[in-house]
Amino acid sequence: MKPSSARHLSFIASLIALIGLVMFLVLRKEPPAAIPENRPASPPTALSLMSAPPDWNSLNAFQSTITRADFEQLLTSVFTVGNAWQSQIQIGETEAIIQTGNADGGGSFHLRFADPGFAAPPPRDWRSADQLPPTSADQPLAGMRISIDPGHIGGDWAKMEARWFVIGNGTPVSEGDMTLRVAKLLKPQLEAMGAQVSMVRSKDEPVTPLRPDSLRSLALDSSTAEDSPAALQSLAERLFYRTAEIHARADLVNRTLKPDLVLCLHFNAEAWGDPNHPTLTEKSHFHLVLNGAYTNEEVSLADQRFALLKKLLQRTHDEEVRVGTTISEAFIATTALPAFTYAANSENARPVADHPCLWLRNLLANRLYDCPVLFMEPYVMNSKIDYARIQAGDYDGLREIAGKSRPSIFREYADSVASGIATYYTQSRKLPRPAATTN
Ligand SMILES: [Zn+2]
Image (cartoon, rainbow, N blue to C red; front, side, top):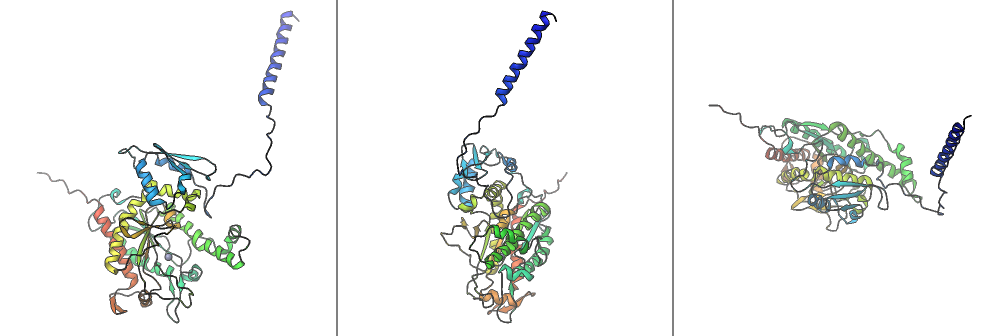
């Protein structure tokens, strides 16, 4: 071996040793830090029952679509009732920083505000009246999609839903069957004005394939040790007819029907006590619920905070107020019902300024449906007059009930909704341009 080769080999050996030392230093693990005893595990993100963690990145589509002033106004005067949102949403000069997890940790989503006058249009699947193509005056709903959601399930499920009572040998009063009856009267009227109308439910059966039995283990997980077997059963039933059912309807509305507007039909009631010996009342009234008024507790749940922001950013509120106003006016003109009023200190409802019949509430259906939703609460099923009208059933023309000539309560309901909607879209949609004239 030549001396130069030996020097060469020894150099390579030193190099390998050096690389080995560097790799040892780089790759060696830090000694494990001492783990404190009883360190609390970080709690899972708080969610509503049966809700999936939200996809916060989907809100990126709303970057620069709202000014700081509009964001703050909608958040504080429409969508919340308390101040707890301040620990989850920080409003800065150029962006809002929204916690995506619990208040004590987790990530955040940054929403950039638009400069005044430069807000991009919000992306959404539904169209407001001024976004629909021009139409003729006799087809005010042409080209639009409306979904009718008859509230509750009715039929064999009505007693379980607790929206049922009977007096003696009278016809049982079942809200879910009555809303379906109104829906079937309303649908052809909207179609005659050009709308494409879908029914979220068209029979007295649930939309969800789940049943109380399949929800017992979830009920068990979310109950406390003191809950009786009867309380557990009642929770499993509520998870079925309310939570699972409305989630199933929301999937249908958002993924398949994709309407421009949803009409949720309900009949209101005052507390009636025993469904076999219900209390009747003199009171009847009307109000219409729009999405908003999230409570402090609701804002702290990630899925509801996300839904609030999505509603706010889509600007559903403005459209709900406009359509809600003409529907209310039509109802009051026909029925002369007084506006229902929630308690002034209500923690989950707030009035819409200057609109006595419109109230903000965060209900499962108006939160989950991804478009403007009008949630109607006319009449009081256990008022003396409305009960008598319900007993009279559906009929053509007028009949004498409680000393006055009246249409069927079901037709009056459907006609009032159809008339209010016709007024709004007739006033708000553009008419086609007159054909250009040539000389
Ligand atoms: Zn109802």
